[in-house]
Length: 118
Length: 109
Image (cartoon, rainbow over all chains, first blue to last red; front, side):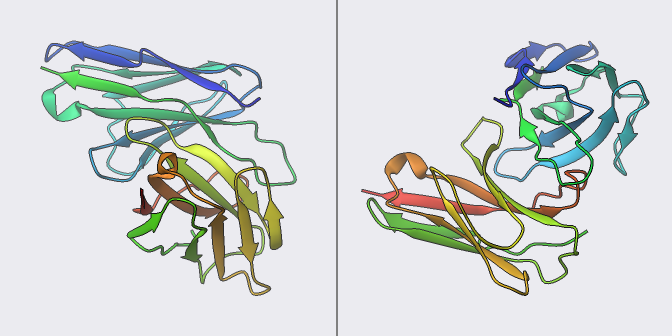
């Protein structure tokens, strides 16, 4: 149980184009989904938190107009990198939490998406 | 947010027990302790979670003293495939995950 998938697993795009990454919780309903970015040899950095049906909350320093997050259903969240540039090249990882009240809820992570912007 | 401190790296040999300790002096009453494992170019994988005393599952044990200011992840009889980065996180309701640098475990033959 608690499987999270991401698609695509890797993508290469030209500078200036937009790229959409999907994150799905396959066997549970995720009230909250998180998006992280990880550069080589570094730790994960939280970009934003999204709750189903509401606007995402972005971490300080993350451009919300550049990284568009949509959490339209309890099993799907998307991250769109708009007008991508080479410095956006990174490993993007999503996670999902069932968000049951009364106790902490573990985040389950997707396999990640490697974005390379040429 | 409870900040965590772990050793940056550890080396071990196959078949040995590995203990990775994490300090979280400012842990709050409602915080749980969660450990993740991450291989290169993969998302973190949940290992174990606990609140106090000892928790054991099929892959690891988690020891938490009474003051909860630290925790120790114990991996019994490690193999080469356990070479990875291990992250300790503390948070309340899975909402405030802040990843530190983690511990890079290298298992040698």
